[in-house]
Image (cartoon, rainbow, N blue to C red; front, side):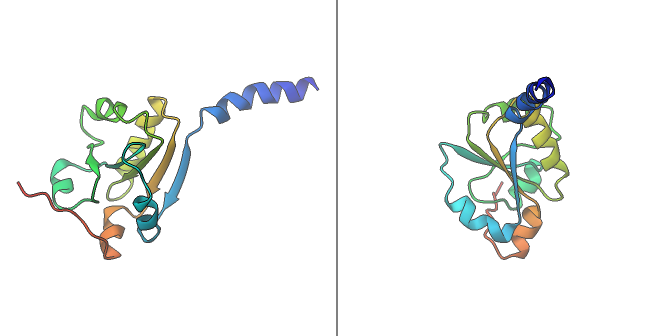
Length: 131
């Protein structure tokens, strides 16, 4: 009985703090993204501003994972129930997920594993921002 209690005391806090991460590919993303509510969710493009401007998913906000203010920018979205994250190769996505974890984000994370490259390859619409 004591062993069970010890196991519960060790693992329950860990499970409660765990992020829920759903990995999807761009072919699965459109119906998921269409159901998102901007009040309770956000799409984050983790690439540089130049990359973002060259083509991004409609409604995405640009937070360069390698910038010095990424943590500050991400902290604005901690109350969102769902955060969708993408970049090009998932390197920046992984950084953003780590930052959100460090910030204590408890909501649902959706990761577009094939990134903007897969999005474009599947013929999905991108928004180009003119300068």
